[in-house]
Length: 150
Image 1 (tube, one colour):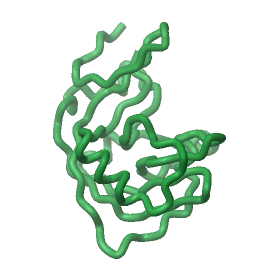
Image 2: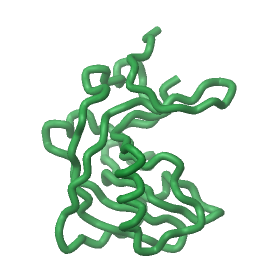
Image 3: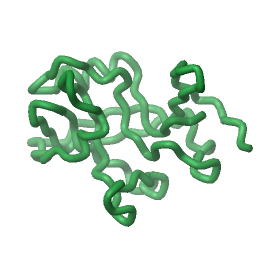
């Protein structure tokens, strides 16, 4: 099952993004990414984007001692695919972001609540659109493969 979909980064880019984290917390995010949609329905699986390289910009940084991460700017042509809405207000999109690290007692999804401070200048990074799979047995992995739609 697709647990979430979005832009994922190779190891070199992940290490670079983590190196920019000014307040590294004890737990590094296990897979640096920008979520476009958590738990997408079959209609929200964007197979046409799979494997596409997408350049985004890191435009802000935030850390509150529990979560650290970056606000990102997604190119306009991809924003129609960004359907990551607030749980509290399903008409409002979450600020596109990347979680870099968290405290022992926090969750990565809470990075959306940070007060992001604008960076002096945007930092461009490139990732690929993919699906993060979570199987019923707990196995998790990244794939660029289309998923069977039922």
